[in-house]
Image 1: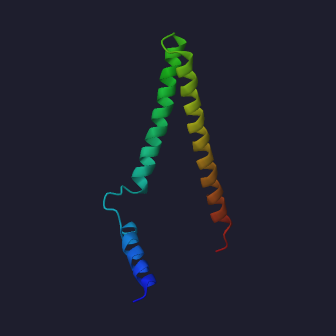
Image 2 (image 1 turned 60 degrees about the vertical axis):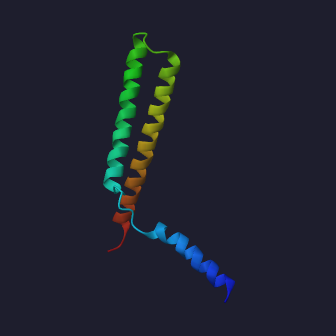
Length: 96
């Protein structure tokens, strides 16, 4: 018996569960909904921190950190939007 065939069979057997469907997977729609919810929560937290800093209830370090998180979230959203628009324009340029 060839040892390489045993190795290939065991590798296939160990990789088999990775190719099966996950019954607990929520789907792309739920993932997008969670992403948008996280984005809104980040913006709301930053706004609350900024308001607290204006009246002296938050330290400047917390304000800078909240603003940096918001800046990163907005830049990410803009990048994703640009990629979606670019993909849409590519689809429109396709010959039918």
